[in-house]
Image 1 (cartoon, rainbow, N blue to C red):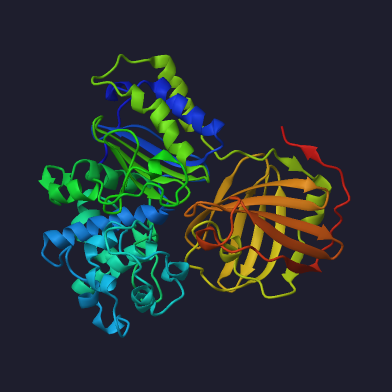
Image 2 (image 1 turned 90 degrees about the vertical axis):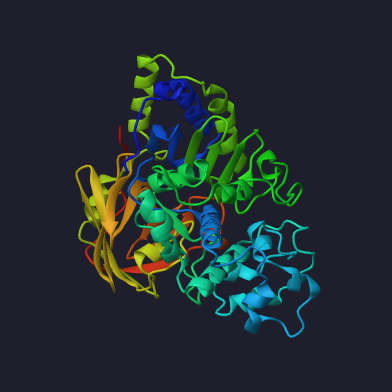
Length: 507
């Protein structure tokens, strides 16, 4: 089923309110990747910021938890498990020799509400640990289950492990015939942990439309195209407050203080709840207004994203369609057509570019493959391989980075006029935007469009040497943000390079 498209005014929303929403996000410095606004199940505004697009699945981080919760709802509905099932009965071979009283009390219900009793999370969310389930069960259960909120991604991963143990299927295998296929969701992937369990707490990737379909399904309390796929009672539990989370280490942001359901957050405005992933992956349901807002973004200012919706969209929902506003609608359409990440002003160095044509550089130390080198926020599954050589080509308005890797040859197109251009590397869409920072330093911002953040690469030329380094586009490293990039030394193999030249700005 195609989602129907209508104007904002037909949905009872002024086009100007959507423009004001976008303006506030821009003023707050929010890096948006995509959004979709639905009213009464129909799309009334949508857009993607180049190089991001509607077709490429985007890392969801903890928004994945809401999908895992829904999978547990299906399993309960089918009698495959119960909310009262105890962890000690589910994993008897993984338990400590003398399970504590709190561990013995812990049930699936407590994992769903983030109240299993842990005081801290296990290291690295269980990644890199082949026996992470045993590590989770050996971790101290300090509190009586159900009494203490701790955001616990490994606990959600354990729900996926329970599902696999009960059904013999991974999380995505289980959901495909029950949720993905009926809703028309495609190309759904989830990162696996070392033991093969899919990372239900943070590992899903979805396109913006598949994200919208799922959140609309939640808003409709399990009903899709006239069929009740999952009982309404599940959503009544999952989206209502199951545990208090006020003051639970989330600062003073109001939308992290309103209670937690079964892998859904309650929001400060009345009747609003959301699925929520790191760096701003939001699926917001306005129950009283029959509206859904889905967002893919990369920001450290998480409350600011929601506040922009509360300030501009929430007060604008009218009970009936509004008169068309051609001027505001035209401005909105033009804005949506031109969305792009904030561009770097293009600066060219004709002499350096001419000199670099035909020059081939070889790494003087082991160098990861280019996708691994770029990495990015949410890069959970490195492809391996290595980069053997790279060279440059500059022609006309753009350039290319030519890569010789153990996987074969690849080409990254470079925008050099202040805008991203896109290219495919082994089935993944990358966007790149470059400029000459100085007469001997080329700066290229690269985005893997499946990820939240990217890398700003610096190619520094000095005689026969080139140094390659990079910084993340988000001011954070480690964990889900990815590791820092080492500086790699390259040596000129052939060609000649003279970067002593003048530069000019692209207009």
